[in-house]
Image (cartoon, rainbow over all chains, first blue to last red; front, side):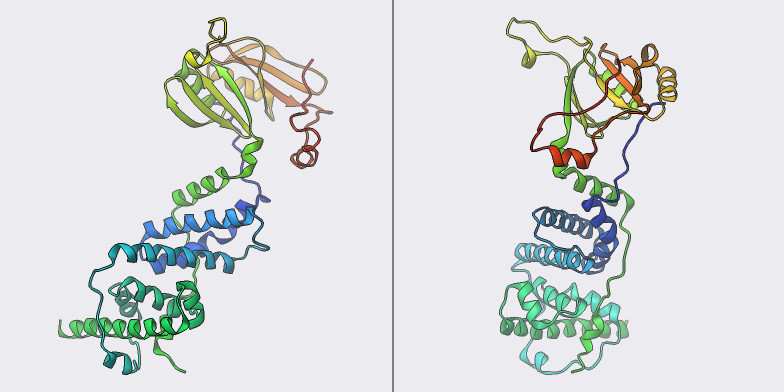
Length: 177
Length: 185
């Protein structure tokens, strides 16, 4: 037996304080949106690394869960943009103007609607995630995506139509199965 | 406006990640602490790296940080970084000789219960030189690593002085490299 005296992290260490306060919230934000433990863990680590760096540079007055979730959202956007660049050229679900003009009355099956997001192109999934899963306003989505508000509105209209098409296709398949 | 897709909202429900991930993340975050600049580094020469690493890790509670070659290892214990080197070409002195393990200079490690620590170390196979001794402000014992380097253990007594971390930060600009620690007589 030895005399190991590994120190426990002290309560006043700002890094430890940030980590303890917000790890489950940040991970709880990312996991349902990523649908992958590996990706959620990577983005959680990136989020905290960025948060700690910002705090050390004195750029953050007060670290709150809301601020950290905002950092996590940036990381999610960056991640999906990288994925989107890699997958550019893959067939996305196409929609017509008719789809876009026909209002969607009701979403019966939320799980199916969330799952349908994953059959959309990355930009469409990203826009719908920010607008509906996160509840951001259209101008806020535009800011996250670095697009104009008008361009974001167009993207959202098409993304909604694509989502509806996938969702209804799956609903039909289920009924006929 | 009633948008049916508003129902897709996912509220943030805290989810505990895997414990291994959480522990690893905390270590990584702490590893980037600027406090690393305050680490005191000591190099010990050893002739048998395996034996030395085993001694410092298993008996004295050091963490092995790096072991990139058969002749070098980096260990940590709190703010002390201990480099273990097998003497070789990079260490040749101007007169052609190589540094040797041993001598009388030593690192001092603070323990809470010196008697218990010494008993544990003896039962673990460590060589303890003599008995517990010390001075006015500390009790001390001297052991040696497998290469013969001395390692001192000290237990504070009344009057022992240790500069607080806060105090060290306040004084650093005037006294950049000093440390204050009572030595046994």
